[in-house]
Image (cartoon, rainbow, N blue to C red; front, side, top):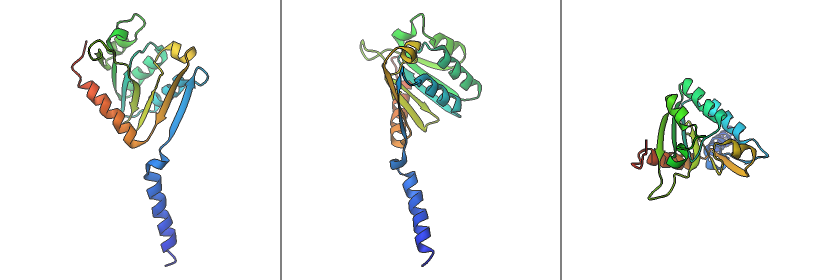
Length: 171
């Protein structure tokens, strides 16, 4: 009987720690907080996969970090919008040249692929208004949420996989 209470507390602690109640959410705003720095940290710590759906990517720092991640053996996949990929400042051609798997999509009918989210190792999702551009980092009012809730991350992963199978591919 005297071991019952400590065992119960230990079991309860384990149950509570695995529940969504302990999922972490971090919120960042630019230009006052460095969203790019947070993204670079996440890219550098990724161990197996980075799945990125982003409307626009022109940031040299973020592009180089994705290339380095691929060089470490991380599987990097990128989905982007067809109109933005054609812009002179786009880094999509650079990513393709570096051997990163890229899908360039157009939106349904005349729409755009307007998502802005990334999933790291199937365990963390980052989403928000932040385009992967210098303007978003330095001048725009932008936001991101860094999420670890398993159900939320699975939802983002399902959406990424749906887009990855999409037939509206331009390239």
